[in-house]
Image (tube, rainbow, N blue to C red; front, top):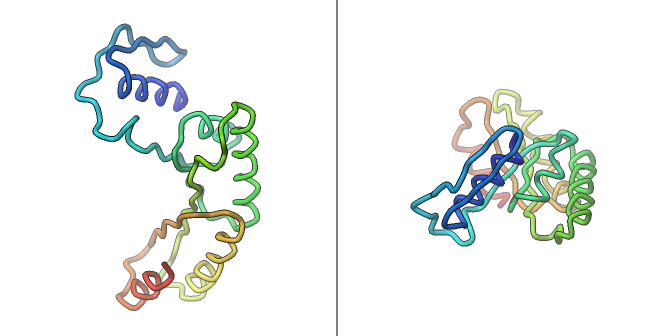
Length: 149
């Protein structure tokens, strides 16, 4: 469904009129105006690690984001994305790689461990990190995180 939706959205963003018939969506000679300012379209970020996601990501994404499951697991999923890109003739380097790290400020040991893992993510090809706080962080933690960038 996501694959079809992104095909449809990108078609509406980039063509004067667009027709599409899939399993989940159908449009006939549709007009999608106003067109986005970004060319060819706004960046598409796809998140996920399920088995079908590398192929969908390879076809549509400008950035791939995966939940922090550990640097080695992240790297294995990233390698599956590389393979999916190669299978369709897309340069895997065209897709920015990112991870979402979940932080629990009420558990300083968990925060320390997750922040310590960031260099390992970088070492396996992660280019961007999204920090998600499960409780409001204090100023000291925000400053600590800002200093990592």
